[in-house]
Length: 295
Image 1: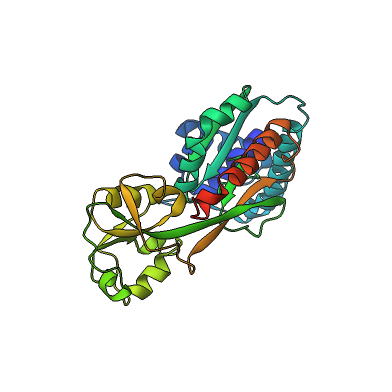
Image 2: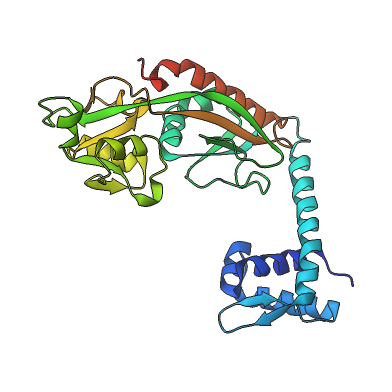
């Protein structure tokens, strides 16, 4: 057999995605191209690699056998790609940074100074709750609240983010006692995002009731609070700098989140990635008082 890596990559993607349409979308090619490449690979191997079911493609026993070898080749190809990127000795190019929307907003506010310090670097800032795959170069850097248990990931602690209760200036809060606050309308995350900081604390204060208004994004909660829809637990770096909001009480000692900067070990020595890492670390040091609710 003399199959090339491109054919095996198509086979591997179809095995993972299950349909020609989703595999084509993942690969950025046409539907017929995927079918043609798989048929060519089957002809080279001399065996059928997929069962063509009505709704999906399922690997045959021969396909299952090839799958493990293809995954090994993929790991090697990704490692070569990452290591080849690290051979550059210039502080230039694109650096892709992924963070949750609140942290992405913080980075975005400081992009003018970051771009001024790193004039040859193009920034891509991606706001997402999903953990981007550093091994596949879906991102060069991640800012996350937890360090995933994944091989090859290097983590550096950036600092701690504090949270507090916020309301619009004209939102009526007569008595800021826990009992009185619990009777007011609240804004929080939906059930799929109940793991977000402050949501368990809020559910306990509301006696298990869900917030009257729910969203899936810190910036949605922020805007709804600004509009006077209710109270919300927000990161202090969002709430304290907004003149349309006022803090109700102090920082919540029970609610905080550590922030970590994650990079793949094969990329941490890449000059442009290292330069952005250093600037992000310095930014968090400069903004420490704001992040910790002490501004």
